[in-house]
Length: 171
Image (tube, rainbow, N blue to C red; front, side, top):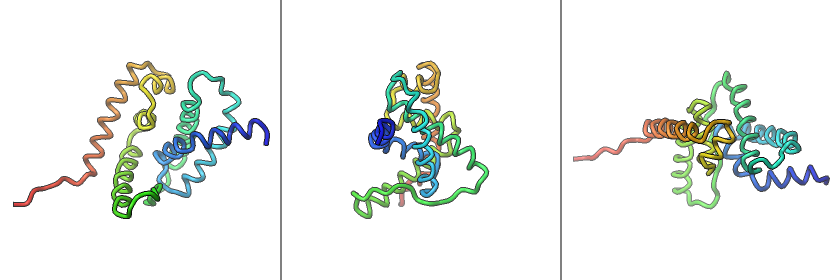
C-alpha cells in the first residue's frame, strides 16, 4: 500500500463517523448512503493531495463530505423520497432503540427539510465545529456565521416542535 492509500485509510478511519453523519443529514436511504459514502471516499482520494494544512483535517474532510452530499442531494431532488430507517445503535435495549430511532428520525427529518445554506451550518454545528470554524469553512465572517447559525437553529427547533406530539392533560 502506498502513502496516499494509507493516508486515505487513516482519514476514513479517523473521520468515518463524521462522514456518515453528514451523509445521513442529506440522504435517508441506507443503500444510497452507502453509495454516497463511496463518492465521498473517492472525492477525498482526489482532494487529499491538495490539503495543505490550512485549518484542521477534520474541517477539510467535513467540507468535502458536505460538498459531495449537496451535489448528491441536488441530483436526487427530482426523485421521490423513500422512508427507510437510518443507522442503528446495537448497544441499546429494544425500548431505548425505538426511542433513539424516533428522536434520530425526527432530527434528521428536520435537518433534511432545512434549506441547504441552513443545513450546512446546522450539520457542522451538530458535529461540534465552532462558529469560527464554520465561518472559515463557508467563507463568511464569524459574526455572519453566528447570526445565520442562530436563525438556522431557530428554524430547526420550529420544525422539531411541529413533529413532536404535544402532551395533553386529562381531567
